[in-house]
Length: 385
Image (cartoon, rainbow, N blue to C red; front, side, top):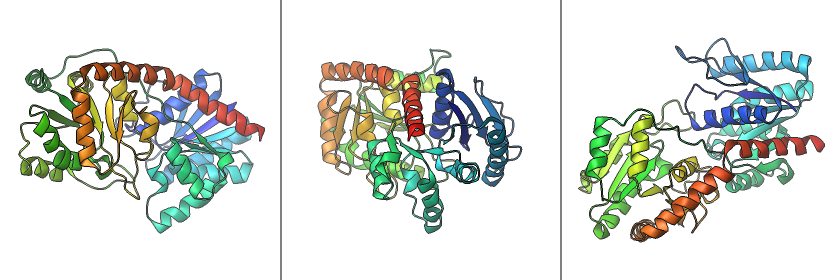
């Protein structure tokens, strides 16, 4: 197939959708398909990420200029090469694909991530309605996202579930910094719980610190909780800032010695944090207008043989195989979360077995080549309809 990827989100910009966009484009290319990417302008001082796929960049920054570039360059390439598909890794680039499809009759597909269809703005909802209805194919990142699409009265035949893949961690390079080494040394022999991700409300980190950790420490007084990640930067969806609330919760519950906000970490420090962790916690909340679409961080932890305790909401049940690679508890139930954490920490043999099962599943089911094959299969089936 000839596939024109139209993506506002693309490396070297850092982010989850950026990773998905690059891995899907490169994966489809590695499977023998002809792929080109229309992308936003490079950030100032940044260099093009190394890859095998051609990337045509907008000359100037900003979403409007990117969309104009995508329409103009897309039209030129459609006239000359007649692609089989226009593929949008997010809804941000779908307006250009919608126009090109209307003008030239080339079908387009959109990857839908969950919260991107829940944003409560009448203008936003009015804007995405024709984009979703005009797509020949909608790739949902979880069964939950597929149900959200179906509830919008979109034909189930156009909805296909493809969970994202996970990238294995890089081989050991530089050593962790002095501060991380000291923290890890101090934690030897202690049960370390770890969360990794942006500090947004739906992640449930505030509630875990305030309501769950005191219960855990009542049973396991030496338990530690490390939080890796910073507040959202250029997110189009999240503008909240909860860092000060987390710090206040730590002070109010007297946990300065056991709860550590580590911020964003370089790769070597992050690897050290995973190496120290016994359990990954993903205490997401079931918010009406902001959901966890899948939970790629759970698979990133699994690749390091760290099993998870997570909440049963959004697309997380697709990321955690309950009872095999981790445990799921109801969202908003601190007692159930604490009980699951303590139960797992007190069973080292079960932790080890879950760690092995999680790593095997992440490598076999969620490697990017296998995931790209699922996208390709969906696109090929779509052409037959």
